[in-house]
Length: 68
Image (cartoon, rainbow, N blue to C red; front, side):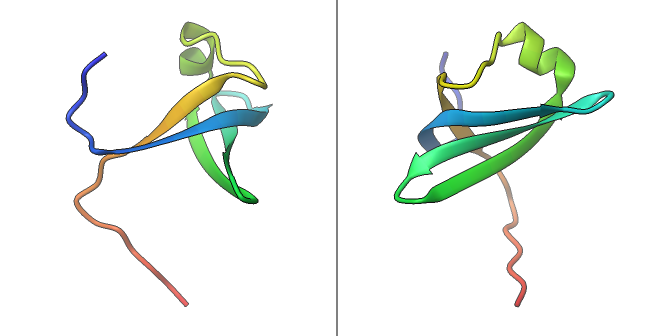
């Protein structure tokens, strides 16, 4: 699969929490860092995601906000 996004971060799924429509997927990217993503349950099913899978968190954005 080729994509235009350049920010691809490899990690391992450590938790999937299913809601009624959406799912929260936590990806361990190492050194105690975790990225969370909220995707549809349909996407979890279509991608056959499960805890322990090696995946990529792909970030494509025109804006990154930071708050303090």
